[in-house]
Image (cartoon, rainbow, N blue to C red):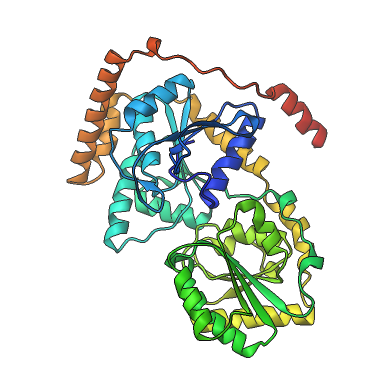
Length: 437
């Protein structure tokens, strides 16, 4: 697994990589994670079940994305892939430079590759155009692509000009046991609305800043608890000061994932004002904790939860979000919904074991396919565009040359192979699955 985004940073991609890796280990596979160094966290760390994480020191450019170098990552990556006897390179996230480079270098080494897209992007602004062209380059010669929702699949297919048959939809999941409802923790005197997200513009924080004063003015018994950190935190603080809502709007800052349950169970409603979202794992966690979810009808969010668990804003606008939030408050006050029953439904809908099993099918389908000759690979990249295609071909040729010289100066025989962590045998696992069935 390769991605710029992993622990100790919290987030949906980070959780996906971790839980998928753990379930694949439980199914008998050997998994390692490669990411960049986070502060003093460098080198090799071993997590639960012997999950090995390589924290490679690279310069971070923006929001934990490393500076794209194309080729300088290759020597380190080659050493790790050979040392760990890797068969499949699985990259995560469109904005991860390490992911894109790992897929390119993995194909040069003759390994199988998979890419999982967790985000939605546009087609009009300069950043999206450049990002989509980079995605087209990376996915020109990838084994298979996974998206976390059907909306995400449509977006990725268009952005990278992919054959839809080459793309599968495998959603995120939650550990439902960690998100059990505790209704006794929620206040009986007032309604608490919970918000947990990174405080960035794309998460709808500007919308949230405008909505909170209006809701507080209408409902005197409503309080807000907002967890998260980011550049928009100052806007929330200024809003709270301006409208004198210190007693009704609590800003608790960033929280670790293991604290999310404790925050959520103090509320009645979860408010998710995001402007773009491919899936939205946090709303599944909120519903599992027994919260009624109020959210915008954008991206893949409408696919995530049944209608009785959500109140949708018809558009990502201030008036619409206020109206939907007031509707949810009324439903809670009148007892017209039973959020306490949501947990049992979520437990049956989203399971990491199911995600791992479906991902394993993708691996099985590509692992036995023959690798294309170099000339066929180059022809795929050449179709990337009149100018971009030629640049893609040059990059691949240079990558092949670098791989040749790396093998010349650091032959495979000079690289020590890592000892494998003992894993549960698949025969035992299959027996347990049969017993469960």
